[in-house]
Image 1: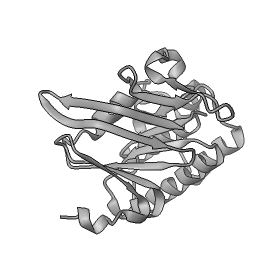
Image 2 (image 1 turned 30 degrees about the vertical axis):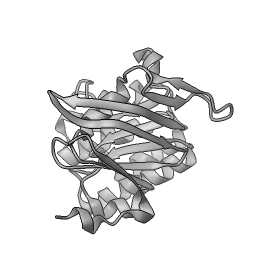
Image 3 (image 1 turned 180 degrees about the horizontal axis):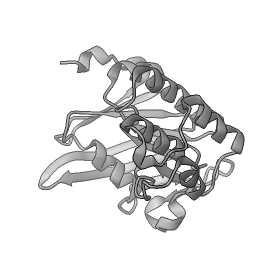
Length: 223
């Protein structure tokens, strides 16, 4: 579905990720964890704008052919990956309906309305929303794009516990129904065990560990 091959990158002169290799199948949900400065957000950037021969994504779920994402022009990448940071660039004076209309390659309208109803998203201008409301607007706008891979940077950070669980449940449903994969930076380790299938731990010194969720114990990372 998505394949990361031999990905190495630095932050300044510091090596933070060395020779990362992993494959995610359809329906996989990968949580990325690590301390501040461990390279979590940088990893997202190297997926969105990859180096040559490092990020491969399934072009067609039937043929299973994979393409090198580095060779895909930016204007076509939204057919393969969706990420919430791409949407926050739009003018915050627009409302949710205007924002949703800007999203290309959308899923069916029934599920779009379900997302709005689930969180009772207001139709006010985004600039006038609370931090949690604005986050839900941007994340759900990312979810209505029909792509092969969804990237989310701390999607539940500003949410209360009720909406946090609602969103994570919705992510599981979205990934399963539309046969895609999810990579999300997470800090709530307890929720990872419930909603994700794999965990990537970036240690920030070049080393990394990939866990299947059945082998992941969040209590080991609470130190």
